[in-house]
Image (tube, rainbow over all chains, first blue to last red; front, side):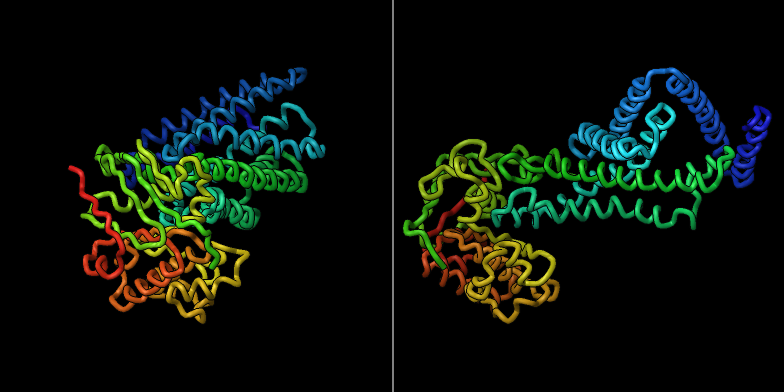
Length: 258
Length: 211
């Protein structure tokens, strides 16, 4: 447990960062102070709400409501990060929902973790948070690939291929690009860096062997979540680039060009 | 190659196409005879490529209709239509991989027809396992023609297919087209080249650029 005095002492570390900024004239002092205060307030608020949501005796439905809100907010963030992907808000909402059903379904269905507020909220948070970057990347890459390779996509359509077949090579390429960073991170885990969940547990006094088991499950969760959410977004984004009568929408719709 | 008995013909009826606020085709009506080469000529921006795209429904008109073999193309399954009416684009659109990979993409279950399609496209069948990354522009364009021919289309839409080829390659391409017409294929050929138009065209459809 960290005492309040200990927490206050750790603020000295922000002072180190501010000192670096001052010595090197980076003019980031204000930014560092604002970021630190904002982070502390946000964490305090989240901690307070989480304490209420997962308190003993509280209905599990409050936790699920929290998860739904997280999924909704994450979809909005994804849509703002990649405005060039048509309909990304709804696609991401579908993707994170499917991701949550698949990953939490496996973990709770197979009783890897018990279903309660202390597991539902953090696991869903890690699922959404860690698959966000890959999801946004998958949507962007599909739109870029199909836009860049428009000639080849239309050549496939002109051969009588349907839109799914015509876009398949580019959806595949986008998915590989989106998933590769997560696979690389998974490979490097434990060697190059110690992940947050595990270090957090160890710092909180949990036996390292237990922490490792939890972290391994989290990494598997993140891999499955990234694979699921990117697939939903990539297929959905690709389908929105075509008309129902098997034409590439970019060909006739300048508003979709990039 | 097997052919349907009836000669397909293409008709455009009062077609209007507007792109980015500009009228590209303005109430165009035309009839294209089956089993012949019809050259589509006209300046840049006259709507020649748009005309081809309307015939195989890669684009749709704002108003008016396009009929193929007497049937409104808007009523046809676009996938079936595009198999009957093949298209070769101005820029070679070879897919990554070998010539065989390209032909297989078009007709995966028809490898017996690959050599015939290559011959019709004036390509030596021994090139079938060459990587398309190693081919010249002229060879790539003929790979694209062979890839379209292997689907055994009744009609071919050629969008300035020789504009990036040298003279010898263009002549080979023209000879390939003439031999296809001899076997009953309808060809609509967009060209800027007057000399080529006179060499290959049975009919000419002249388009004007709209103001």
